[in-house]
Amino acid sequence: MLTNSFLVVLDVVAGEPLKSKISLFLCLILSFFFSLMFLPQILNISRRKQLYDTPNRRKCHHERIPRLGGLAFFPSIVLSMSLVVGYRYLIGFPMNHQLNGNILLEFLFLSAGCLFLYMTGVEDDLIGVRYRKKFFIQFAVASLLPVSGFYLDNLYGLFGVYILPEYIAIPFTVLLIVFITNAVNLIDGIDGLAAGGSAFSFLVIGLMFSLKGLWLYSMLAFSALGCLIPFLYFNVWGRTAKGTKMFMGDAGALSLGYLLSFLVIKYAVYVSETEPDVKNLVIPFTLLFIPMFDVLRVMLVRAMHHRPLFIADKNHLHHKCLAAGMTHLQATELILVFTIVLLVLNNWLTGFCNITIILIVDLLLGILLSKSLKIWKRK
Image 1: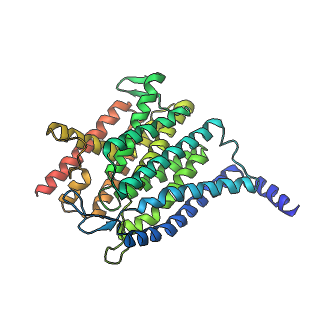
Image 2: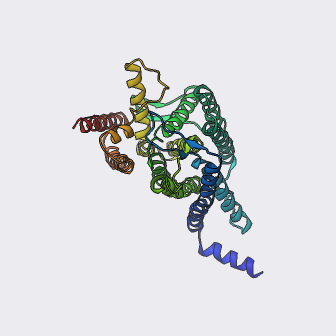
Image 3: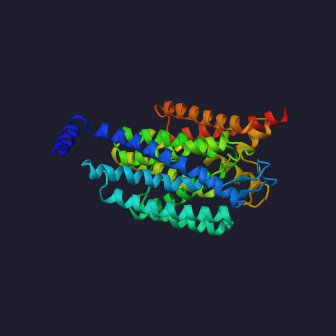
């Protein structure tokens, strides 16, 4: 009786926004502690089983370092989300209005796809996976999401295109998911860049979802953010001599890219239906501008020089930063600051520019950054 009375009073005093904000905090904290618990165990297993990333001419490190840190990400996210949502049901604060049919279907297919990518990444980190097989799996898991009715069909006038018919919107969304997933994976070349950039993106997109009252998506973003914070310590400030340094590997990078593509596209899809404003498409995709721009630039350079498109080299922006004399942390900070500047600039430009002009401005700034790093290297 007393417990029921307490819950009734709490339900009246703490409205849905407060309860949901507490849920966000719990997702963040639980994921943080799960990741903090898993990562040292992964380090110990990696050392005992000699599971190291071996240096070669295209890599930026010169010592053998464990690369299985990403193993902690997916379990930490699933555990924190499941416990918080389950506990809300248990104490009488369910999320029925959030978990309607379509959203539940989205999360089920998202979980299945993320688990498949996660296991593919684990296999790649341990024994290697041919890029053709990885692409096939990426297209397969990307195709799961449109099955739930999830696809981007409004480009807000980008190059004169507005509403996309379904037969174009669905394959376009699949290609976009694969592109973003690979873009995030390919910037995982220096300490802190993929994890730091992803953490910042999850923070911003999580806050954006919370402002729209889409708490379940925000909880997913904050769960992902929580698991990255302990990893950043091991990745950026860990020391090889002390056995505390580690990389995330493909298990982590592919999972993060898939989750980010889902959240960014979902935000754009939701607001195109409820609040059709070009800003709501520009801002989330600006978070991922650097990885997407960098992949396009590198592929174009390889094609111009008649080199294989999928053979790794040292022509990414983070490689240019290192060649210019920056440390890994300085390069990561530069790219994050550039992203923040773009966010502020694009938020301002959406007030009086169409989306095509904004994209051209961003591309020119990206080219300017790349050329500046090349000149800096010469000096």
